[in-house]
Length: 201
Image (cartoon, rainbow, N blue to C red; front, top):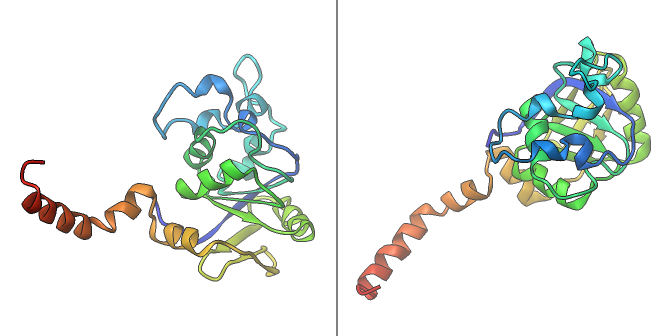
C-alpha cells in the first residue's frame, strides 16, 4: 500500500448527498478480485451514456477535474452495500482523499485499508472546501496527514481528527498484511521455538 503523508492536488466538488457504493462502482463490475482496472468504471452510470460516450456535465469528465486526487463530497458518502471495490475504483482513478461531513462505517474502514484518507469535517468547513474546489484545476488543496490539516488554495486551514492507529498505518503504507509483517521476527521466533517444543506437530 502506498504511503499517505502530504497530498497537494486538484479537488473535485461533488455536492450530492448519499452517494452510495453502487453509484461509486455499479454491481456489474464486482466480478473481478483485482484492485486495478476499476477506475475507468468509477461512477460509471453518472460518467457515461448508454452508448459509452461521456456525459460532459459530470465533474470528473470535465477537463479541470480529470486528474483530481481529492473529492469534496456531500453528506453520507459511501453508504449502501458493503463492497471493497468502491475504494479500489477510487484509488485506481487516482483519488487519495475524500472529504465529507460523514461516511458510512464500512466504506470509511475500507478506505484506510486501501490507502485512501477519508476526512470528516463540519458542514461549514466542507462548504468552504466545496467552493474552493469549484475554482477548477488551479485551485489545489493540500492535505497534510502528519499535521492533520486541509488547506484551501487561498490558505485557509482546517484541522481534522483521525484515529492514531489508522494514521500510523497510512503514514507508513501498512495494510493488514503489512501490519502482520511488522511482527515477522517475533512470528519466526515463535515458530522456531514451537518446532523444537513440538517436533511432531
